[in-house]
Image (cartoon, rainbow, N blue to C red; front, side, top):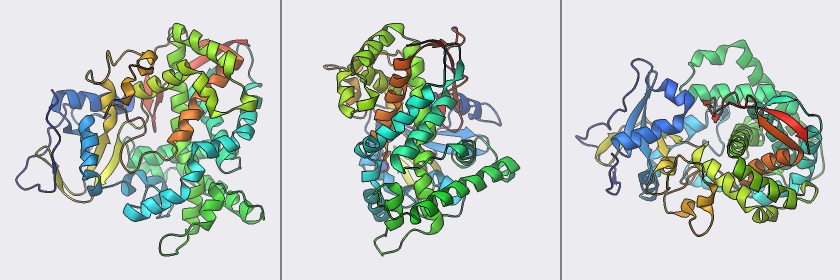
Length: 452
């Protein structure tokens, strides 16, 4: 059982024991559990061993700090002993770049984050939304009654196109497979430990990496040849200077402009897929959402205020993020040795900070494994309790694009439901999760039964 005592963080690790190791399959460790549903690995660890424990994935041992105690760890300054760069920065470092939002630390990270905050804001996405959503409407028109679709890959393509048009005024869908392979392979090797390093030498990956670089270079060259200032992510990237007046290198610029795809393509697609599944699996909630969509959704004149008129959709989206969190745990590397609750964490250890474990604790949520959007309406608003809700991580590196995602993924689902009547395919399908490279519904397919 987890401890009810406050978390104690200390820089002293002398004569302390290692955190307990969660029971696992010999040799492979928790690799199968992590591939199927990583969230529940951390929940099980918390319930059985408390807020600090170890998990094993093949030959890699990870240290976990989980639940509401993870929030306390951050509040007590423990985050200063962790670095995101070596792990989350893998997609950047793999191509030879160094500085990015996920690789720099401290004051440099704060400076870079401040420079890009405006272009990752909800308002920035909304300003580019008309063009992006018009394109999505055209995409939807190509599908017809009887079509069967894998929804995660479908939402991936739509999301990539929306992010490109809304944030950098560019299209990159011809490179969709290359971007997907590059991002997924690097994350599975360096972050999740689910793939060996030799896959980075396979021809498929090397081609995808080259194409990933190619599209980034093309976008930069096109903007440099233009004399039109757009104040989007590309312009901000080209004009960036750090506190010492140093601009980005060419590779750093490339990774900066490609970062919306790296950070958003899989995550938004996964949340869209989970939300659509949850609604199809709960027909009573779906009916309420459909009524709201039919009354209030106008894509041709879209505004964020529309969501205020669709409270069931909004609550359903929150509940989906609670139950199917994409940012299950934030991978970090310990840059100093320290202790938590009397257990030592060695320098160089991979530390997984999982505030989202709180999403499944009875102290915060009544019947936490039941999909209940009503729990987020006033006066309950269970997600607003302290340390109860962390769909985008916790700490100084909270997802910069969270405001975009909160609009984009419910909107994707709303646009689908506005145009189509759909059913699970097969109707007996029950949710299975795959973690490659982020948690998403596995083999989740729908059939269009009518065009509305």
